[in-house]
Image 1: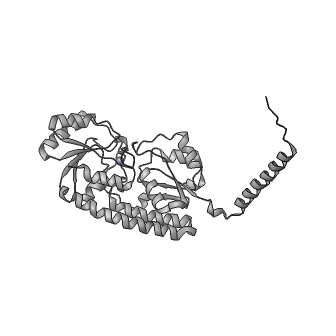
Image 2 (image 1 turned 30 degrees about the vertical axis):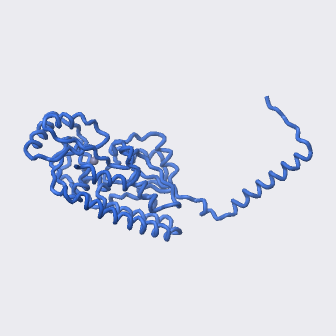
Image 3 (image 1 turned 120 degrees about the horizontal axis):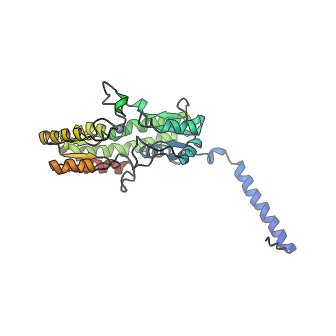
Length: 313
Ligand SMILES: [Zn+2]
């Protein structure tokens, strides 16, 4: 039931004045330059890209991160909510190197957003700007090798973060030249901050050089290379292939022979096989987050490397 309230004449007058005031207020907003409100809405595949893009883009951009930091970055379910995020994006930044091959292409196709298509000027594939390591000499897709172009986890070398920050700065300038000075200033600040931290992390890791490690998946190829750790084996027989009993026994033998310090384990695979190996050999298991929010306490990029460089004791 609708209740009608009859306003007395002087109240009506007040209401008309108030409406006029509101209209004038909005008219004023329409007359302001559009750029004051226009934020570039940038969709990115992983949290680390979001953090880096926000650091350089500052107040002129909004980032929408598609994958959560505690998910396996290779296997993301292209849910409808993610399609909507891609559909509304003005630009898209991906890791590349086939890390998103199983989930981003179907998402982009379903979103049908020309600004978020690989041939668009507003699309950035970070892997095109980094040299990938550990390219397999023979790729057998039937065996499920998910690193056919080389290892795509290049952001875990903190030196590469600077390379990527520079690439993102240039990308933002290319799609939004109006704010070039802001992006350059934010980049310079980030560079200064990061270089100081690089020195600290280098010092923290100096004593670890030459340590042998086992991993579940070769997430830390670039981190290990940066700090002189030697990966001697993975619990996965091949990238993306679950552990087999034959391979697990081989790893146990390898550990007994080579005496690595620890198993560096990602946060999203079950640690069951690592625990079995640990029971047989006494080797330590160390959880190594691969991205922001992979563990609750990893809130930003600095936290991530602070954690990684302090994890191996
Ligand atoms: Zn991988």
